[in-house]
Length: 132
Picture 1 (tube, rainbow, N blue to C red):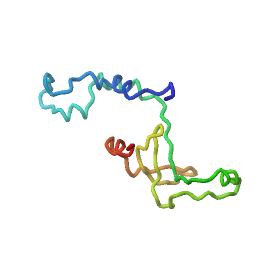
Picture 2: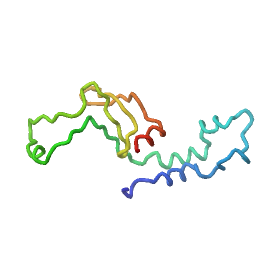
Picture 3: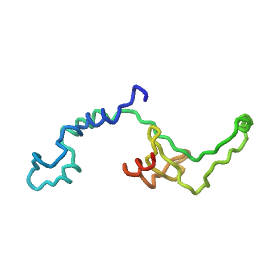
Picture 4: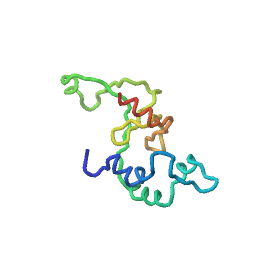
């Protein structure tokens, strides 16, 4: 892993994920606040910790498709050559952050530039299943 990226353990430490007890014992909640509500609204300390990592650069890339070619076929690629991919134009494209598939989307045109409209974000459980 490149030196300029944090590991998951470092991110968890910055966010304070390891500081709370793992069971419900010994935890007190303010009146009217549930455990789900506590997870949904980060405390001031957690927000400060999150601010520490918000500026880290992440590489977002989009894969339109792929194809397997022999070395001979690759050597024939040049200007004007069309390389067919394994997807049709209406298929969703894969969106990666730092090489990890996190979402799917569709290609759109914004003024004179291409863009991606996110249509599905994979849950952490879905991302783990895709690794197998």
